Amino acid sequence: MRFRALFAFSLGLFSSTLAATALAEEPLPAPAAPAPQADELPPRGARTNLIVTGAATTIVSYGLALGASFLAPEEDLRGSKDLRIPVAGPWLALGRTGCPSSDTSCSVVPLIIGSLLKVIDGVAQAGGFGILGEGLFLNTSSDRPAPRKAQPGPLSRRYATTPTVQMVPFNFEKGGVGLGVVGTF
Image (tube, rainbow, N blue to C red; front, side, top):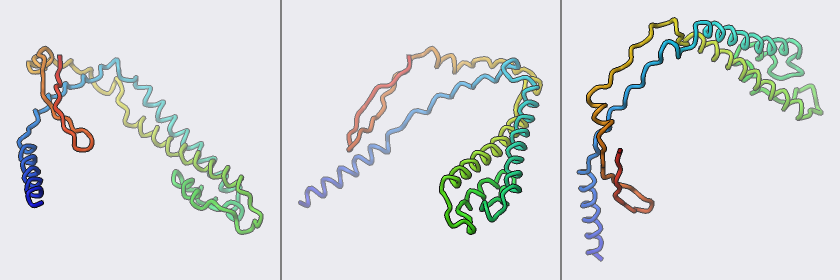
């Protein structure tokens, strides 16, 4: 029994020393992605279209929520005053969804429909702001001059034409270990 424990301990110690000496080869430098050419970028008018579309989406969806907040009093629609807050209002109102205290025979169907409309309105307001932000930060063809093409260096040519073969360890489930061969040709 003592021999088994000593053997298991020494085998674990031996395997951990072998694993520490295994070194992986440094990865090859990734080739730089070519910068988009001026004709690949959207035209300058795309920025204006995105800004107008994002602002219109946000304003229309907020206007619908604002109108609903004034049409339905707080006693009939819990959280209706929260709809007056832009972007966060529909989500705050969704948290207060429930039967009003004045209605004793409340049905679940209007609550589900109202909750669904609040979610759609909240997503539309946030999406409008997202489109607006994309329009503000969009790179267009007139923003910068056309970049020069990168010339391939000696390393990228060597790695592109030379085949490589490497031995790599594989780990399998339940303690299985293997050795494999990986290469580029």
